[in-house]
Amino acid sequence: MAGLDPNYSEEVERRFRAPPAAGELPPGNGVEVAAEAGSRAVGALVQLRALGVGERIVAARFRAYGCPHLIAAASWAAEQLSGATPALLAAWDWQTVASALAVPPAKFGRLLVLQDAVRNLGIACTRMPPGA
Image (cartoon, rainbow, N blue to C red; front, side):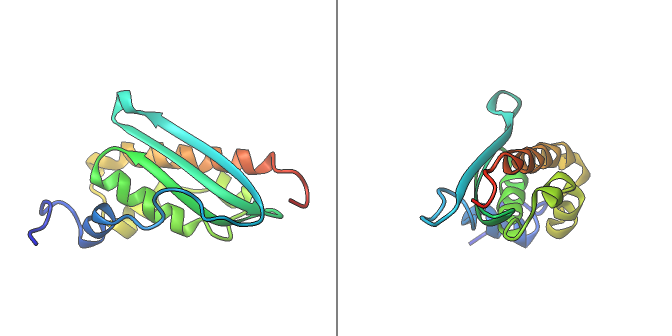
């Protein structure tokens, strides 16, 4: 199968074609929290849902609207969120995913939308009931 475009890394193509962590959360014990950032009107929307136990994320899923780089980055981020605390989410930075997926500078603005969604998830996690 031919590649999408020579500007996309193999990992971006793989995650765009079959994005791990896309869709709904699996059933589980814990508190479900959600956050989003961006909008369809600006061409970049990321919605994150996570299952929290105590002060940690135990599972995360995403939905995204945007370019292949954004969808791949949201997939990568959702997989990385397992074990995250609200403090880690508050400090999450888009540059790690940019490097991991070889995202070109022209797409960095899209990754800022993802960063906002992850940080918003951190805020939502701080509202989880204690001991949840």
